[in-house]
Length: 501
Image 1 (cartoon, one colour):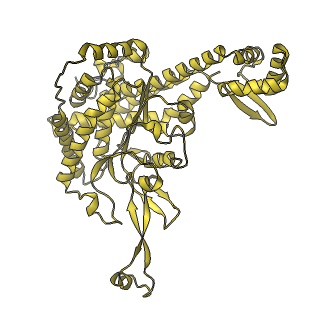
Image 2 (tube, rainbow, N blue to C red):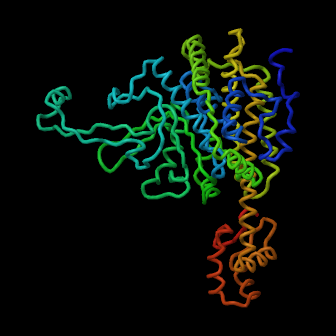
Image 3 (cartoon, rainbow, N blue to C red):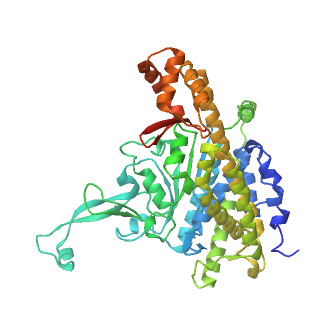
């Protein structure tokens, strides 16, 4: 069979993606088996982080995308996107996030050390204040002030030699020197409890985090990818962050608001899973069954550190072969575009099946999900190249790579939709349980039009009439349950609409 035809769209096994609920998809479909190194990575990771196949695959792709970013640029007509993948994993506490990170982080640290030694990258303390950082490392976010994240300007006094070199007046000694922030540089920007970052609930010291993250997620090389800010003192600060975001947290309050209002989560691959009770019960059973029993699990840290490093060296060699042109490192098979088009139609169909707010929210993810699908296809191709003996057949993205990427992306998309549906059901259920809300919901259902809209004044008047209370009392009760509704102004009139209607 011709390699271009292997795994073509006609052979793509779609039912596993369309029919199975997200909590049942604990294995990558056999027809879209990941490249050997990633397949092994997922298997090892899920030995300690049970049921988390998709997050495990994503963490491996985050590391690969970060390490090859200088060798690979993906053209999309007039624009170029880099190979980085940003991953935000939101999942019920106590279901394996920390266990997976106990595998991912040591591998990443070992990988960065190998790359730094191989390239001769100097450590931070040896880099001049005005030079860009070279070294790969991990930034475990603890401090969220502007100065800690993106840097600041330190006042200094110039020496006589520096005054003469700069042609200054003898008494003009005061100057500023930039100090780099922790987001500057390469490697991971790691959030262990993303809920504290200021994304979901902003505070005075965290209000800029969303802007910083949105900026660093822009494609490397564009002017919009450099974080700049004028702080209270000194000249403007410039932060050159080329890191990949890897963030984990439990489902926080205001998650739906953060998703719809910040624009941040559309730039990353987002995986949300409210773990069902039966799986939590199984995890609890594993704890009690093994309590007091020690099992020495030797995670293959060095094996995967070396495996990823081999891919780094192979990709660099290919980059040098095409005369250091990152747009030519990767080639695309004839079947690639057909596969990408069909997988796009799959996603578009999934979006069209939703209604109301869910459909509107899902649509905001569509374009960037397609870009992420293309990126992951490229990364799967890069990993597979390690096992292809003929150099002429390496670094060619196939339809199979698209199908591998599609499986992962659609699982992440369906996790988002499942969470939104669950969230809206909970919101309606809470409204019905609330004696205050029952009257409003009954009247709302009587008065709503085809778009789920009700004039606010009409709602208040009918509730006042039905429940036999004053308008002032209606207003006081409304304040208790108004978070379940959205208010829409049309001209001077105000309408209300049940969220998710």
